Image (cartoon, rainbow, N blue to C red; front, side, top):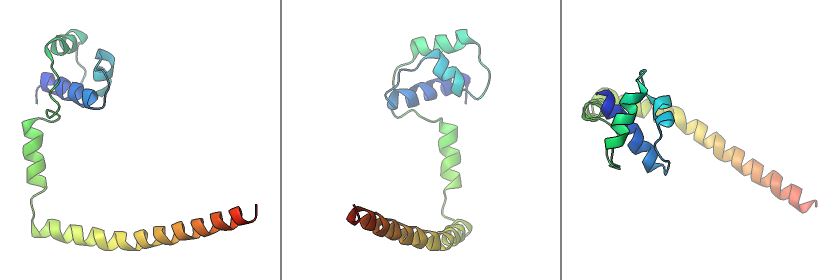
Length: 108
């Protein structure tokens, strides 16, 4: 990915968030040091493209990493098994909190 692509991607992400892309905001998010004139030059020609938020190289890498392989399925299964007890515990804590809040409100 070129630095110009990275600047455009950051500008698009900022615009998608409702923020105005500024040199300072973009400079703070760049992965490498870039001269201000280069950032300014890209911003002068930049036009908001809401869907351009990652490079084609990143798209390919993401697609390759999310392929359904037996290893990925096993990992997903293990993660889900590890998360289930935590989700149950959170539900129990929510119920306890609600009970405590109800008791507190009834004593007022």
